[in-house]
Length: 227
Length: 244
Image (cartoon, rainbow over all chains, first blue to last red; front, side):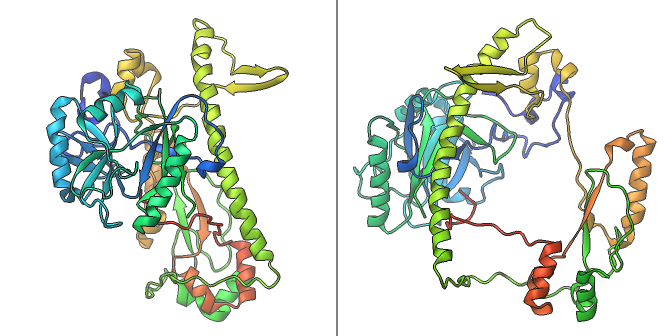
């Protein structure tokens, strides 16, 4: 994992040092902006993607990057998240997992937009430089319980919890079935809890970049429901 | 006299709006030209009087559709937007896939050479696509990553690039001309005059958007729109805000 530029003041780096100053000395700045998917339109209209892809539910919440050892949260623009105190239980769990190698987690923070799963962090990804999506999933699923509401195996979504988003391999019509069932679940819950699916390329590393919060990565594609 | 200025003058809008103000950004060089009558450059005389903040109405007026033309356009725009989004997304993925395949070849093929082709060709039968590699790079703020990747060459080939922006309309009016003059002198003193450039446009102030509907007739507003068009867009996604 690359350290943030502002936390490595050696003589070489000083020559091309960025203007940005660190937020606080003890807490490192995020190594990246959260990965943003490109828009893929409605799933039923999208052509087949080349290569192997996995699908995850897209949740209606706040995107958050979490520095697990300190439990510090950032929003998708790189600013500190002001509602971090509302995720205390989930952050405590992430803090406990930090000694098992989980330093930075890419999460969806569920709060305020609806009443489902309040105070819960859904872990979307592990922010680390080299491992592929499948390798990152392997570590995450060994540490964090996968949420099963989106798979129809839970009837409710836990509050104040830490869960992992499920991941479904794109083969046959499995993803379309998931997409349709998430839409149906929204109807039965009377809430836009799911927004669609996000497809992730199985062989891709996490797209780490500090250029722009708006930059989209071609290894992620979102297929939103029509609103 | 320009019709817009005539309207502002005749209707007393100049006082109501405080006149038009310029928005300046120190970015690109603009040759000075004579200001239009009633408009001042840099010197922001008669800035808008503070009026009560107006917010856009929450309920939107509905565009009349007597003959179904609007409905047909709505259907067409939505349908094509969905198809376009799906196709654009798929095209992006396939282009990224081809670039990912071409990039290692590009570096391997040109290893040790100084004369480098700007593109790599990819073919399917008689059809050809080019993958271009231009002398244009996105920057990074991670200087330590550069040093790790290229070592000593880092300082030779990389330097920090930055732009300083000046929001001209936030500078106190009385200080603008003197400040700009001093800025130019300062840059000239450091032999950096070429680094300083500016562009300025005349834009309505923030009160104009709401006030125009009480100050001008619909015809006048259409005329004004020919000079300073209002930003208009077609939104096909009517979901929540930008935060995700």
